[in-house]
Length: 528
Image 1: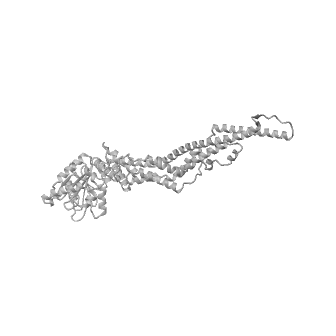
Image 2 (image 1 turned 30 degrees about the vertical axis):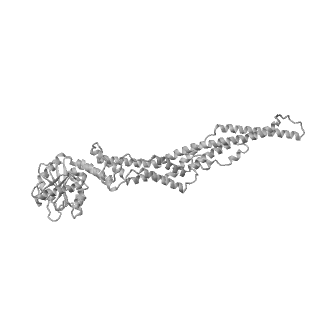
Image 3 (image 1 turned 120 degrees about the vertical axis):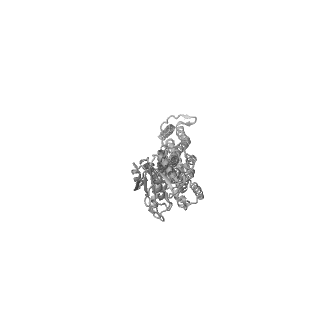
């Protein structure tokens, strides 16, 4: 797995901060072990930087019989470590101190109770003799694991018989491949080998280390018994201690290793992941609109306009019948923006919404590695339970505004209709008066005519015909106005549905993608 790298050097503080943020972002998305390990690295780094930076803790680690305790004695010029023959003897790490002033807090943090002051020039060196990493005692192995994760510099002591043992390579050397700058490998007991075999063993060991990812790590052949190679090892340790940088190199390697553990797969470059706009604007919006009853609401807007128009401009003689019918918008409880009475979504419509949500999640997670892709898909559905109420409120709000004040032409048409009624009434009254006078055999009133038709008849029949014609013409205008209002309502509803989709589906998905992108950036910084 290859981590993204940054061209510019990043400070250790920035890398630690990036690792801490990456661990927080990965919470609940990646394996908890990797997240906890990263947080442990950050905590350990914070503690180590607050302790003596003038001292370098160097650990001698090895298997049973590798002779590390003998090497510890040879390096310290003492007989502090008990040398075992057939069984592990080191149960608790002990320290040899060159220049012990100020090292107490560091040793307390390392929990090394056995401390011995050693005279010498290597001021600042703290040499630790660890228990055997392959000890039959579980407590010994745990002590090794604890200190291997905390010391500044690691010296692995191997012997000619077991230097290729898979236990040390698979459990320690391979996983510590990023720690090559703070690691030394020693092949001890070379005095037991024929001279011609020493170089062959050292070359073989270097090949094994290269396979572990530790190519270039210093490899020395020494003999604690004869002293061969010990001065060279002391000189190497003295150089590392004098630089006072082993602690920061160790922490930098820990950060890079933790970042690698967080980066479970090889993802694309940060910034590529996005929610496809096509999925948002078409399939998803269409499915939500159908499930929300938008077609029924749009049709109700058109019918409501026609209903109110006919009630306002219809023939006054019969328009009262229209008022007996309920307004289509009010019948669906859409007139005042309250919870609607639109028909519930059908099984097909619910299935279409579910499919659209899955499509959005799948498209958004296509360029994101697992298990983060699962989190992206979950985010697309995380607020799906809120969709029904949100869509209902949106439809009600978008259609309630469709019941607006009456257009001016309604008043004009209404006035004209009443004028036709007035004409009919005048004609009818005129005719009734004539009928009454004739019935009583009284002198009749003069009756003007239009051509051969008397005016009372013209007013009565003409008013009725004019009223019917005006009503028919108004129905045409009402139909056109209803279609226009329906189109406006459809546009408003579409915008409202898109807003709901954006808030409840797209926003959580984009937030999760942004979280992943930020995580990828933070891991890249931590690994740089």
